[in-house]
Image 1 (cartoon, rainbow, N blue to C red):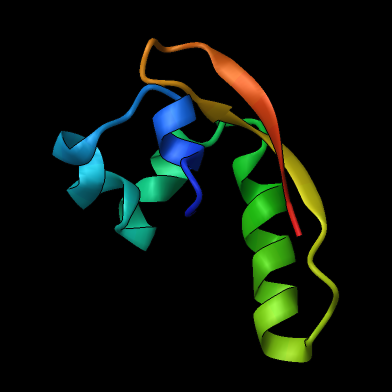
Image 2: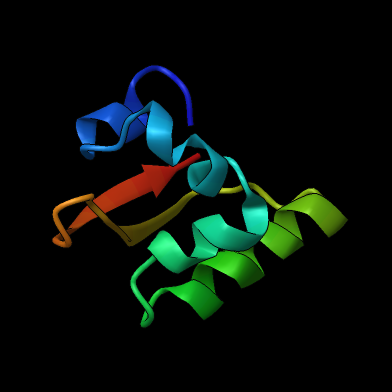
Length: 70
């Protein structure tokens, strides 16, 4: 989430509370990708499975772009 990721999606300091809250950040994911991404993160945290997922995330303008988390 660092290195300008959110800024490139159009978000700014006024959005920090939402983009830094793990309960809220899920709402930025495309609804069709949420279960997959959440399950992959759970497997990674619980069992050390490698995390390498691709999903769509909403820009501030409302469009979705693909992103990869490793």
